[in-house]
Image (cartoon, rainbow, N blue to C red; front, top):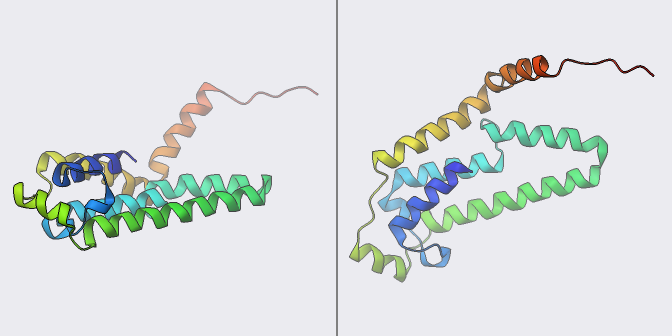
Length: 157
């Protein structure tokens, strides 16, 4: 989510609006921003290969025995989120440029991400990919620490 917030701010600086109806065609002016935003959207959906996948999968697997209906509702929420996120990316980056965006672009031509914006985005995206492909890089040290802090206790019955 942090990556999406960072990129949304970058989109605002280039379009001067948060209204999706006033945007379109930004990928032509900022292809790197578009690529980062699409990758961040896919990560937020929980696509395999990104760190969010393991969190969502764990929740779904844990919730299934408790309530199949609740799990189905949660999966439905992810699907709705995916549709919304991908439609937003399509409209902002690949849709037809709007009159409002053309006016802003004429006054202040949008540029692609600068390095001061790319570097944090790269770090966040790399972290999502590392956790997506190698989740044990985080779970093994956390498990060891938590086990040391709270050793198992046998409760007499």
